[in-house]
Length: 153
Image 1: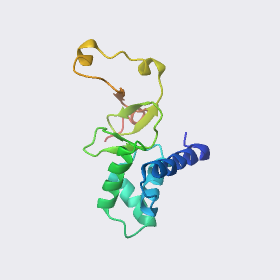
Image 2: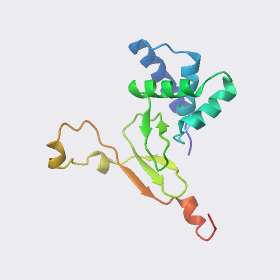
Image 3: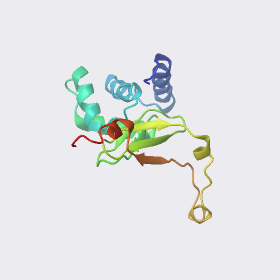
Image 4: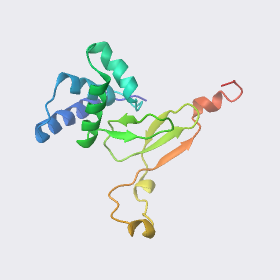
């Protein structure tokens, strides 16, 4: 499964368009941090992004990674996925979608569902305020972990 060149180019173009529109400078560091998320379906955490980007930019700091991730999130270029670990993971897929999370290995995969997109927010929740979006996260055990059923963890 993997991302195609067209998808990655589209995400990078969205980055450049957002920078122009918002006045955010498209620095080399920001571009490399965004590229690291845009080129994968892994939903990497900040530490993973830091290690990978640092191979290309040895002087980058973890603080720069975090500040950039929060800025990219505020600009709507990425979203934060709160999976099972204590670390937030990041996703450059801005299309409406949902997540499957493996409760054993932490794998996060995107999926699309019209049924879930059409989810009707319960009236008691609507009474609390306006709901601007919904996101479903399904948790279970991935096929790889299921195939290791007899193997020790």
